[in-house]
Length: 217
Image: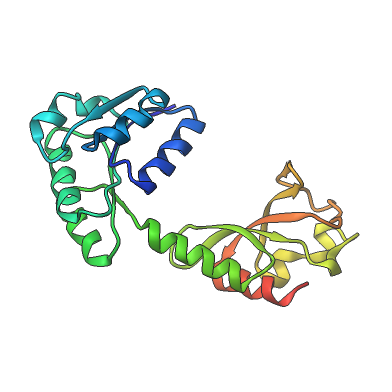
């Protein structure tokens, strides 16, 4: 469990907050809109109506006590930039800030952000991959070259063992987990027999995995 300060409760902030709560994190939320805070406050460990651009408002929150501070503001980049800088000046351990462009990312890193996320770009990329690759159910990009994908096992592999299908040798797919509906089989052995409906969670080169998923039914 982590303690998280979440500043900016627009759509992105609210979605992030919901996911953090599901992971049992202790979350304090901050937004300058009274109606938003009043509606969300019962869910969270703390909720403050405040303008984050005011250093005194943030200083009162004991910033160094949080494991992570997230600046989730999307509509006002100047505010995001200033709040990121203030958080670092107040001793924040780790600041994650939202950006919509590469230029914004550079400025946020320059004023002290430890990590910058692109929610709109990431959502667009994931949607594009899913629309173009019907056998991809989810994926997580590790860097510019490698990703982890959840993909359907191709029909031609049904009743074959992992050793016989040889996904790593023939397609560069490192099988991490087998998903059977809601059940997970982590680190399957070479003697595991693929069955109809199985999904594989695999690690490898992004382009290579997409090519595989598109070419195998």
